[in-house]
Picture 1 (cartoon, rainbow, N blue to C red):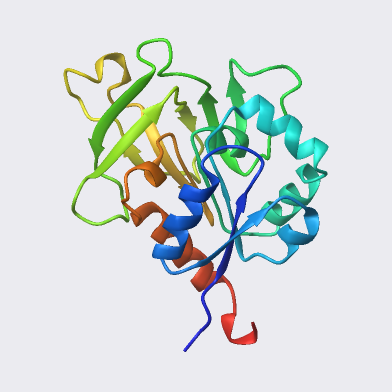
Picture 2 (tube, rainbow, N blue to C red):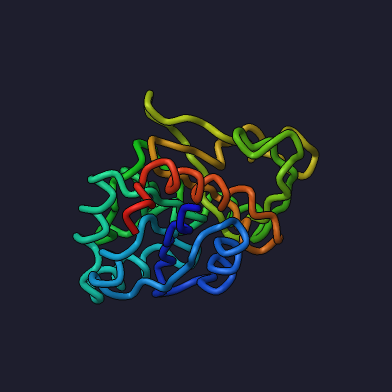
Amino acid sequence: MNARPTIGVLALQGDVREHAAALERAGATAVPVRTPDELARVDGLVLPGGESTTMSRLLVTFELLEPVRQRLAAGMPAYGSCAGMILLARTVLDGRPDQEQLDALDVVVRRNAFGRQVDSFEADLAVAGAGDEPVHAVFIRAPWVEKAGEDVEVLARVPHTAEAGDAADRIVAVRQGRVLATAFHPELTGDDRVHRLLVGIAEEDVDLEER
């Protein structure tokens, strides 16, 4: 029997424990990542929600920015939720001029896109790769993807409902290669299907027999 993949959770800000619990339920061994040495020992990485500009500064402070960029460029599986999506994006609208990006997704993301309408928003989404049942998604001052590159697979859009308003049809989940991102917080609902997608990518990508 193969070992469980080891998935790190960037433990600088956000729902670290909730993501770790979801990863464990999804079949991974979850560990916090705060140092380059800890990053070097994981098969994949979750970037949780939080405040993207603060997380950007903390990546620099903890000397993790370049190591994470290098691991992503080398093909490390990763998943970003909310602020994590913003960090993974190539371009961010309404971000700070000094905000650092990890450049792992060829997308244009609008920061706090939902915040100007409602601070939180919930919807049932059809998420590609997550099965036939809808995913109940919780958005908290969330971004959305304004533009996705040719190599980016759109996994979910906001459905057309009365509550959605101008957010209807906006892209809120994407995948490019081994990198996933959602504008919502699956770690808050007990639905582990998005985390299972990441674990599945890590299992396919890593020779676990050698661990």
